[in-house]
Length: 168
Image (cartoon, rainbow, N blue to C red; front, side, top):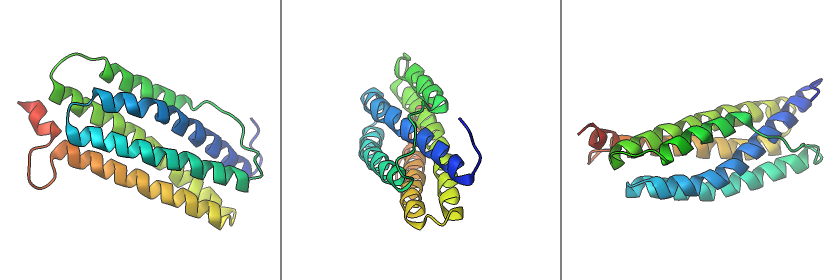
């Protein structure tokens, strides 16, 4: 890899995010299957649909970059997913396991928020407004997914969340 320009950095970031989303498309159904809480299963299912859209937007951004985005493996996402797989295979109380699944999923969301925020800013610096807009749309969805995981963990306004049930 050679990084000489801001565009080179953006291309590298898009390659990384593209593989991260590809890996998530495989991991989210496993996380959904491992969850015992209905709200958590629904959050994983909904985020799988969103992730498909994220991958499509990244393809659009890649086309805006002239299709010069290489295939790359996102090692960070690989590690985050490996940690999630450890939770999936864990034995124990379903509520505690759900709390651990939320923790693993939030690590993924925070990684994606950082990645999309960086890519969006780079696209803005390069006056690639259409690409920046697509990346911003995904960034907003990632932030909402993180908020939803917080809500499932804490139970929102009316009921105990996964974290409180895990304490019992």
